[in-house]
Length: 267
Image: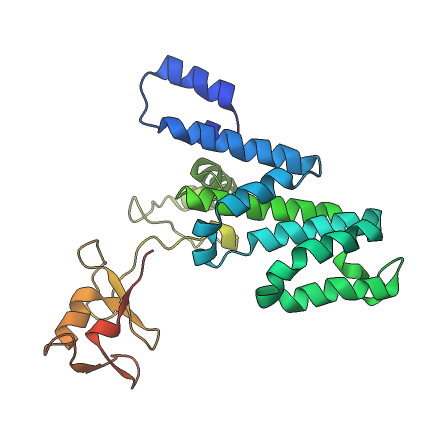
């Protein structure tokens, strides 16, 4: 999976041949071949494949609140503006009307740059550092592409290895201290110190109900009340003894609601 996600298709094929049958969907590699073809085109400053893919998946992206298509069209506008503002103006006239309902303010800022030609004046920052803009949009595209496949944008193996590399100096220091003191860790699964990781490496895969103190499961999932507080489904049902329509009070704030108003939280 890691080799396929990293675009190492020849190596992954050889690995599959030598390692024997591995339960990986055959369609997965073709999906990532498409992804890397689009990313290669973006590196060559060609956004057509990315925009075409995004529009073909609009029925899946729009319900998620995705603004990927606008990011791609905005980047194309910026690229054209930095080369020839006339081409940018023609592009804006044909494309930007589709985004006015959701992105009116952003479109207005881009169009105001024409008042300050040739450098964009007060709006020059929108067109600065174009390479960074290309990289950001490529990352956003990868994230949306992988999300439709039910995958994270980064390979789990890459994340685990990087987190381990970040944590290793602290672990080595703690091991040296404990060796000098001739002590051992209290439990196998417990670290002797908190290891700070960047936000991108912090995950919360479990939830412990603050009422029952039990870890939630598929049969007892976390439920969010209208006030925003989250408790386990079994705890919620115990509070709503009278049924789904009876009024119950949140155990953490004065707000009242009914069982039917609670929504399941997917972690």
